[in-house]
Image (tube, rainbow, N blue to C red; front, side, top):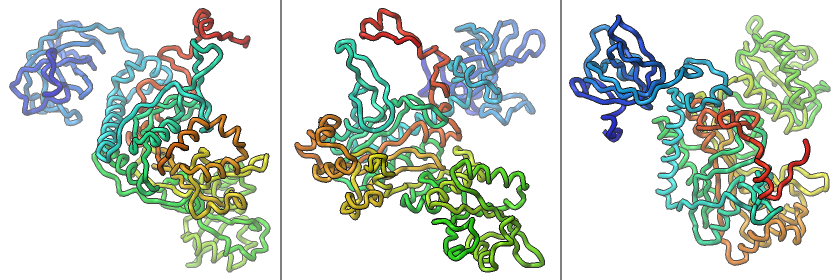
Length: 579
């Protein structure tokens, strides 16, 4: 066995019928002990692979979580005493001798998945929590996924290169962690929020296919899918198109999913950003949910109902939703308003003597054509609920898209796994107060070739060569084809209101490198924490990270963050202002 060492012959969970009659020596933790008379005890011995039952002389003092070595002979369990819920349930270890390797105090909680434990308590005693089967499985699933990613990138000719952790401030938008310099008092490094600029410099340096399992840091508020520290597959390639990059990443993602779950997902479909917004109300569509948004613009184009006099009228069919109470429907109206809509119209679809009817405060003011059009266009049948928002197009789509997800109630980690590439994002997302457009991504994103001529005249209509990978409604990562031509980069900077002097000051070390021959290139990065969480069926990435922070950014295990001693602050030339 590859798991054998000088202290053990193998792992607890590997013992089976084929080992009957063999003498083994196993090491692990005492999961539980059950007395059987005065001189006999059944001890469940646990290691990373699982549990096996050992029949031990009851005079040995063993308690929960003691670390022991057990030597004995593998034998069949007596007939009728098998445990089908355990992989090792047909056998036990008999004629045991026990060596206590380390005694243990009673743990702060039971080391089993059924135990409900406060998260702060779990993280304070993470070394105990990590023994639980769920955590063992999660972190090993993650390791299998990372190994598969590396194999996929190596197979496709990529070179793994490490980039610096002490870096210079970058223009990517997220708040960075600052690191004071002792040798250059008053100056700071930052911890990288991504290796974006470093990997582009590698392209200039001739490494035409780079990747890294990169540690990144962002000083942003934490949530279920975000930590200060995170890990991503970071890649960049030269002489490629968008299709090439999506192909490289798809291969790695599908390999990772297959390694983690045993099944290879279907090929990843693609969808434009505008189609995602129009059909699902979000650029992170959850394709497990069958329903889509429907456009009712034609149905209400000449309506005299003021509630539908808006640039866009969108609808969402909720299968079986007509059973919702009036108070629940009122709650949906308030939720829509909280999301930014002026209001929400609802229609219960019913049947009366073979005819489809609508139950709604607005039903009586609709014309027959409008009632028929609403039912026909949404595909609603008796028992369904139809929700309608009339507003600006983006508002109507976004509000109904959020309600679509909330009403479906599908946890992100619940299968099946539905991946989708969202492409052709806008290059700019809005106009700022100064009249200049705001970039939707970083300012090095290549515009769509068909839209470059509108950069100055209609910037908000310009598409980019940017793309996101989405899984079950979670954004796994994003990337783009980069600008490698000085003339296009200058036009983007000019559109953003960035002067030549400011561009040189902020991005000079990148743009200067481009003057020495920059190949066409593009890249991508996706969050390994997020991918592992979904594949493990978890709702929070904290469950696939060995030592995460809490929602407040604290580390209950070490007590971080902590104050530094005065001497350390003096070395760095730092004084703490009074709170």
